[in-house]
Amino acid sequence: MRDLRLNGDAVGAWLHLPGSASAELIGSVGFDFVCLDLQHGVIDDDAVLPMLQAIAATGTPSLVRVQLNAPEPICRALDRGADGVVVPLVNSADEAVAAVTACHHPPRGIRSYGPVRAPWHPPRADPVCVVMVETPAAVAALPDILKIDGIDGVLIGPSDLALSHGMPVAAQHGDAAYDALVRSIAEPCRAADTPVGIFTATPEHAHRFRALGVTFVAGPSDAVLLRAAAADHLARCRP
Image (cartoon, rainbow, N blue to C red; front, top):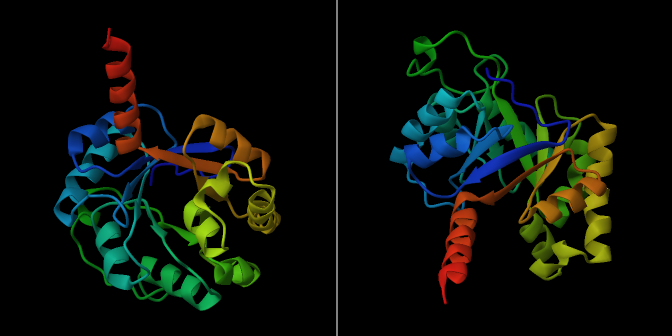
C-alpha cells in the first residue's frame, strides 16, 4: 500500500464531485491522501473505480468515506482499490469493532474475499480504518473506541459535532466551548498514539485546529475550491 500518513500534520484532499480527470488532478498536487466522499458527495458508485484508478496513478494514497457503517459499502470501497475507509457516525466500541471487522478478511474480520483488483497488483497492506467521532455518544465512548485493535485514526466531523452538542455550525470558527470539545477528543487520541484529524474549511481553520491537538486535516472539498476560485475570478474580471 502507498504510505498513508495520518500523523505529522498530514493534509488531505476531499472529493465531492465525480470524475477521474479531476481526481487525477487533485491527486497530482501532493496531498498526503485523497478522500472520496460517498456519504455527502455526489459521487455515484460507478464513478468510484475510475476515480481510485486515477488517484493511484499519481501515487497518492486514497480513502473512501462510505455512506454508513456496514460491511457492504466498506467491502465495495476496498475491493475497488481504496487504501482505507472513513466510517461515519461510530458511536460505541461495538460499532468501532464492526467497522474494523468489515475491513479485514477472516480470521481477523468478516470481509468477503473477492479477487477483483487484488490479483492485478502486488500484495497490499491491510486497509486503513478511520472512524468518525461526531456525536455526544461517540465522545463519551471514545476511551473504549481507542482500545479497539485496528482503529487507525479518528476523524472529527466538525459540523455534526457542533449540532449534536446543541451548538451552531459556526461554533467551529472560534467558540471556546467548541474548542474545549475538540481538545477533549484530540487529547485521548494523542495519548493513545492514534492519529486524530478534522475536516477544515480554510487554511486558517487547519492551523487553528492543529493548535487544538489534531494531527491531520482534510478539506475543503473540490466543489468548494472550484466555486471559490470561479467566484473570485468572476469578481476580479468585472469592471
